Amino acid sequence: MAQNLSLDAAWEKQISPQDRNLVETTFAETKAALYDLNEYTYLRHDVNHDQALLVLVLVHNWSEIPKKTTDETLVCLNEKQEEVARHSFSFPFQLSAKTSTPWTLIFPKGTYQHDLKKQQNLVVHSVSRDYESN
Image (cartoon, rainbow, N blue to C red; front, top):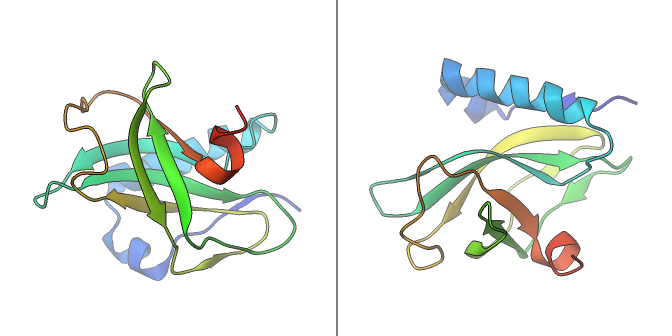
């Protein structure tokens, strides 16, 4: 069974052509790199009007069974592997088997470093799964 890309109906309506291209291109690249089965692939980030950090990621379920994410602590690391954001997330969906979907992680003000550079790439990890085991 091959990995599939799925966009929520709300995403289908609101995603910009640039973000759709970014999602589809990154998914194709990620799907081809079977040696790297991270659960989160960073796409881009921004800060909104409420000073929350918005991190656009692809969420992957590489397994053969559906996955529900509840109270999972995620961290963002910068290029120096320094933690720059941490927050707990519960997704309002169950991710089907062998499926990837774009999602925006919202790190409220106070849960991330405010000097984060716009052009800086981040890595997103689950504290309970991959970050603490490294």
